[in-house]
Length: 253
Image (cartoon, rainbow, N blue to C red; front, side):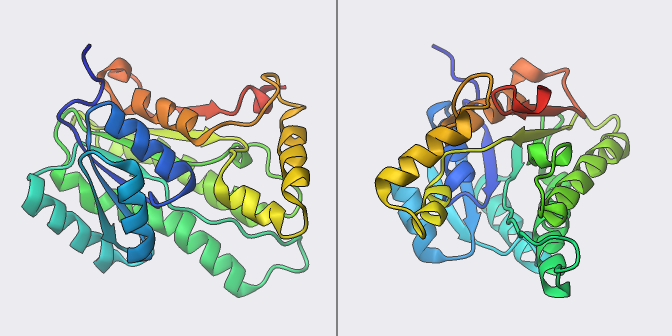
């Protein structure tokens, strides 16, 4: 059976855990050569072992242009090109209006907005005509939870980026799309819940999170990966500039 990403070279930022890890695992299963980036070498080493296949890790901070330029130079020296860019690295900050600090604002927008720019812009010279860019946003672009204006605002900013960028790259053949998950059952989600709950209570809380969802549960990271494979493959060859919600229908009801 033909693999959707056979022979493709992909970079996934924030790929050592959570959604990024799930995307990397799906890409490997579909035949891609995968480079993941993250902040810590140990986390990358652990993730590379878990992912298996043709996967390598590069320490890079998406908020530092020099780091991302260096990462792409390394990829160029090894592979000569990059076919797929997945701008996944992101953080969330929770604070209601009246309690938002300058440090929180700067950190949230630096990672979630500036980090996307620094991930995509230096990749342009290495992307072929069939190149694909997938940017991980969130249902918070249209339904920001209370206290998450910074996170929702930064994710909405990158939605605007893509609307403009598809015009900037017109004629290049490069496609750019947004993938917006809802709640995802990640280790970090469970760890955060586990700070104030027992393991049994965490399981119950995760189930409760999915009860209002039309599908009746929250997503597994690999399901976000499957959607990223679609947006990166020839199956979506005439799809660009969209925001694909992968949230079990939650944002639609």
